[in-house]
Amino acid sequence: MTRVFNFSAGPAALPEAVLAQAAAEMLDWHGTGMSVMEMSHRGSDFMGIHAEALADLRELLAVPANYKILFLQGGGLGENAIVPLNLMRGKSGNQNEADIVITGVWSEKSHLEAQRYGKMNIAASAVDTGFTAVPVVESWKLNQNAAYLHLCTNETINGVEYHFMPELEATHGAAFKDMPIVADMSSHILSRPVDVSKYGLIYGGAQKNIGPAGLTIAIVREDLLLNDASETRAHSMCPSVFNYKTLADTDSMYNTPPTYGIYIAGLVFKWLKAQGGLTVMETHNRAKAALLYGYLDATSFFESRVNKADRSLMNVPFFLKDESLNAAFLQGANEAGLKQLKGHRAIGGMRASIYNAMPLAGVEALVAYMKAFERAH
Image (cartoon, rainbow, N blue to C red; front, side, top):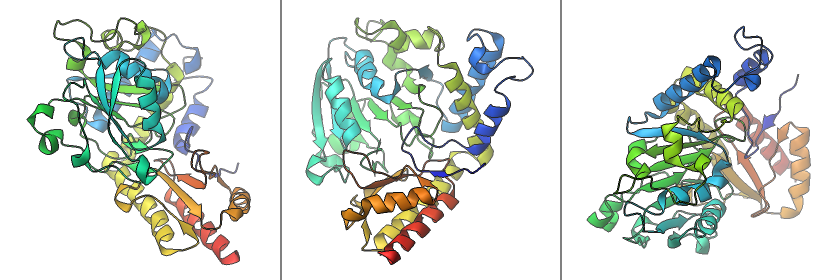
C-alpha cells in the first residue's frame, strides 16, 4: 500500500495510526462482534466511547468546568446559523445584534448567514487588503449593544490566522469587558494550546484536525445558555436539535449523534495525547510552516501574499509568479504523490494544508518538488 501526502483543506488527512486502529476494529469493536457504526448510541459500549472522547478533549484543551462540550452535526457552516439562533438574543432576550470581524471567505459566509436572524455589525474588514491580514484590533468599531463578537480565527481559504487573543477591555474600554467572543476554529482547533476561558464559545467542524466530516464540536460557557430570566437564550425558532441548552442538558444525546465521527475523534484525541499534547503539536506545526514559508520567502518564482505576522500555520496559499505554469505544477505534484494542492476557486493558485496529521516529511517533499520545478522552469 502506498500512502500519498494529502494536502487537502478538508476533509483532510487523518493520522495513519488512527486509520489503522479504526480498520482493525471495523468489524468487531473490543469483542462486541459489531462495528461502532452499528451500536446503539444509548448502549453502554458507545456511551463509554462518548464519555472518553469528551474527557480527552476537555483534558487536551484544558476546558474549564463551567464550559459544556457539545457534539453536533451541520458542520462549521451550519454553526453560522446555529450560533445566532442560540446567542443573538443576548442576556436581555431582545438584543438581536452581534459584531463580526471579516478576515476572509469564511467570516464573510458567517456574516451573510447570521444577518438572517438579526443585525450584524461589521466591526472591521480586511477586504481592502484582499484578505491578507487581520485588521488592527484598535481599529475595530465595536457595538455596545452586541450580544457577542464573532471571529474566524483561521481562514482556511485565505490563509490568515489570529496569533493573538483580542483583549477588548484593554483596546476598547470597560464597556466591552464582558462581551463574549465567539470563535470559528474549524481549521486550527487542536493545533496549539488555547485559553478557552477567554472565549464565550468555540466551535468547529471536525474534518480538518479532528475526524471525518459530519461531526461538529461546540465548547460553550454555561452562562451563555440562559438569559437574565433563567430561560433558554435560544430563539424560539431554533430547532431543538441545535439548541445548546437542550444539548447540554442531554449530554449531546437529544437525538442520535454522529456516532462514528465521535469514535474517530476520540481516537484522534488519544493520538494527540500520545504525541505529548498540544504544546508538542504546536512545535511540530511551527516547524512545518517555517520550512514552507522559508522557501516561499527565499524565492521569486513563487509567492505568499499573506502578511507575515498573520500567516496561517495550517493553510498556506501560494502562487506561481507565472500562473500559466499552474497546470504543469499540479500535474507534476500529483505524479510525485503530493495531492490536493490546487487552491480554492475563490482565490486560485495553490494551497498546502498542513494540519496535525501531516508529517514533516510531507512538507520536505513538497519543498523539494517546488525547488525542482523552479529549476526546470
